[in-house]
Length: 63
Image 1 (cartoon, rainbow, N blue to C red):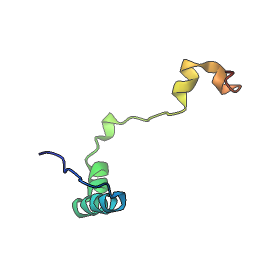
Image 2: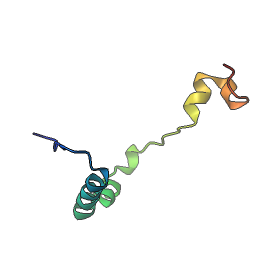
Image 3: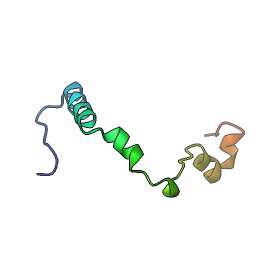
């Protein structure tokens, strides 16, 4: 099985387990070090609503 199956949902325990894995394997730093600087992107979360519905940028949507 690829993913661990949890019989009972204990989010704090799952959080600690994931955090321990990330710290042990230095995941965050590796994600930065292994990133190709020439293949970067920027996620512009506020741009999409303006493209889809421009009136959201100037006023509240009317229902």
